[in-house]
Length: 129
Image 1 (cartoon, rainbow, N blue to C red):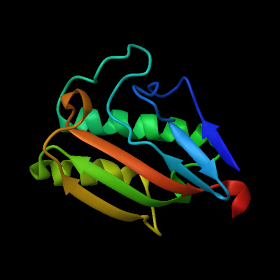
Image 2 (image 1 turned 30 degrees about the vertical axis):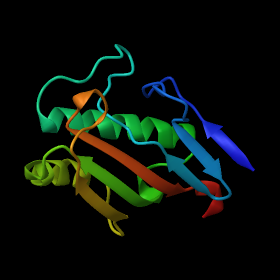
Image 3 (image 1 turned 135 degrees about the vertical axis):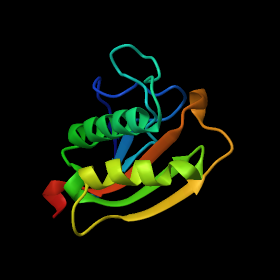
C-alpha cells in the first residue's frame, strides 16, 4: 500500500508529485528546495541560507511521515555548483549523526526556480524499526 505524505510545513508540490510517499516501512521524499512554506518564495541569501531552508523543509516532510533525520538511510544532494560542497556538508552534518546515511552528491546544470541546492531522502518509518 502506498501512502501520500503531505504537510503545510513544507512547500506544496509544484507539479504532479507528492511531497513524500510511504511504501511498506520506507518513506521517500521528493527533492526539497529552499522555498519558505509560509511565503512561497525562494529563501534569499547564499548557499548556507538555502541549505538550511532545505533541511527545514525536509524535516517537516519526514515529521509528517512519522519519522525524522535519525531514521534517514539515504540522501541525494543536487548542487548547482560543486564549490558549495563544503558549506552544504557543514550544514548537512548538523542534521545527521552516526551512523550517517548513505549519500550521493552531484552537480547539475539547473535546479527548479534556479535554486542552489535540492535534497531528497529515503527514511525508515520509526514504527518499522
